[in-house]
Image (cartoon, rainbow, N blue to C red; front, side, top):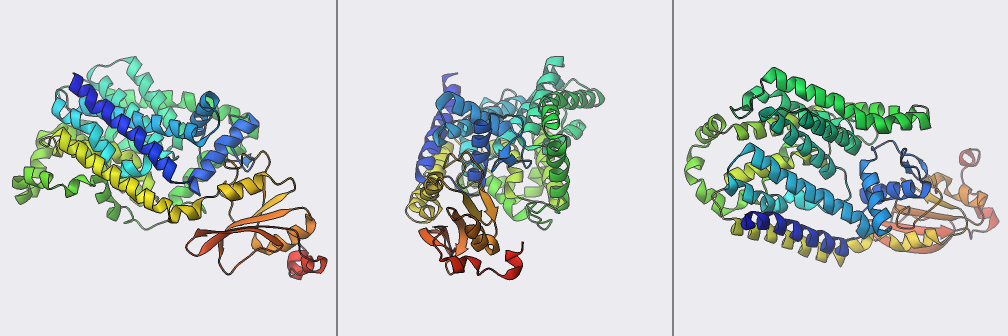
Length: 486
């Protein structure tokens, strides 16, 4: 019992240290972290927890659950990056705990396998990459795990309570990242007859009916947010979020949908098995199976329903996302528990101590890499000086280019910035004699009109600039005639 607690508590403790050290070594990273922290900050400033805003205009790209959790942490601990990371730590810890609970449900009585899940999850490269970032994917993962565990328990011991819990978890998944939660859950539910064992007493039809009821229950927490959002925005916000975003990403027509070829995910799949796939101990334990891999796979498929569940969860979801035009690597993060549990099955013959050492090596190398980046690359991404300059400005400020919330949270801004393109810069300065222009991502041979206040490196061939009115009057009218007429 004590050993079992240690194999759960120690990985969580190490995870907390990793997140703290990682945060100390790197700045808040644009575009995602700056954008999402800014949305959470504006929710707090506006005291409006129904409709998120970005640059103080309705933000319909993401639902609000992550922002709510960050604001809750800020309400308790005060507004800071560390308090926001407390939410990240809580979410990452929940994923570790629920992955272990799923292992116990799928492999009942196999304490050897379950004891390895914490360290295997912590050492997984995908988890290491995302565990300390302010993103939505691990929050979605926790909701999916909660729903699957509740449905599995219901399958062996039917109860309305588990249907309700599964429904609430699914609803929270929608509030975490939208309707995509239904795609993640569809395949393992649909494949129930293929992985069902005598332990699951519920017949397939009854199981599917229960899952359908859970989906109906999931609409309740969603409606509790969507209905007030509809009222507040006359329906525009909810339509943009639920329809435009979802359909746009599926078709690839959305400007930020990241349209990529169907094979985009194939080269990324081995990362889910890293670093464990490189362990000589794994190859040594399974030396016999490696000589006849297809026969070993067929035998595992036939004899281990839990593996069928994991494979029928992982593979169809990857295939489904491959058919969708919009693709990002982190769309597959919710499949991390399936990969971790397959790793636990494969590595159940390897000691927990060795697995813990492997996880420690991965985390240590990551910290060393971040320490090196803190002295080089991360220096170019430290937006705090520019954010302070913007925050201290009494007059109007315009951002030249694609604003990604670089200053909202970091500068604790309480007013929107004007967002313009470079062709409008001179005219804007002419119209705002006491104004300041800021830009991030200009090439080294580009600049802004006006008197330069700051010029700092941002990336290898780009920099960040701030300038204010200081041009002679004639120079303010040098924009092309077509631009001046706008």
